[in-house]
Image 1 (spheres, rainbow, N blue to C red):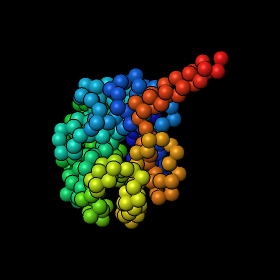
Image 2 (cartoon, rainbow, N blue to C red):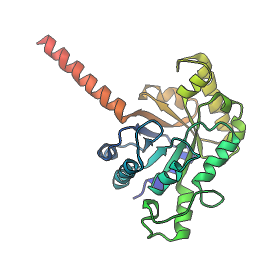
Image 3 (cartoon, rainbow, N blue to C red):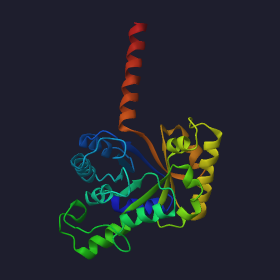
Image 4 (tube, one colour):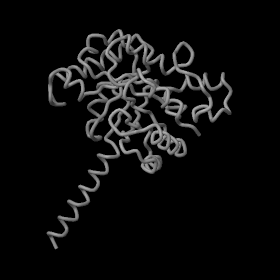
Length: 257
């Protein structure tokens, strides 16, 4: 099996997909997550200390567990994007896509044909040279996911233009969008209106929408707006919450005895 080859089709069909961020550079953590029913993970190379070597190890662990792994790159304009795809990423999450030019440049960077992705079948993505050029190009172009993060006030003025590009879907970055709009709360009514607008324009453009949630409690609320891809928490937040709950339970038991 290779679930990474199936993930893009599932996304474009509008299936509900559940994943999480991985922010610790631990291949063992990726292996553990591969033992769950998660649909995918996102290795956060934008905000976590991933080197190319640690990204390689985590991608190897994901491949061994047949767990599709996307990478959130620091920028879609640098070498990080191509490196991540060569290592076997199922797709790319690109921050700060503000307009049509950004969206076009980003998606082209993910594609061989009609794009700017540099070719080599020698890395993991090409099975270390064992896949012929035509097959590798066709498979990669068909399977690679391009998710553009909508997280800037400027992007709100260009949603239709971004929607006309070939990017596969939009990821609503609520925290950065709030800051860009001069807000300091994810509960701000103005931010909620912007999220609703983005979802409406995404539906009009036939683009699936992804979103980060701190926990699963709000899945239903945003699913009602049309969000189908959910990145819930992270390995860090789950570890913290798990041990905080354990300590609280242990403390309560100690005090009652």
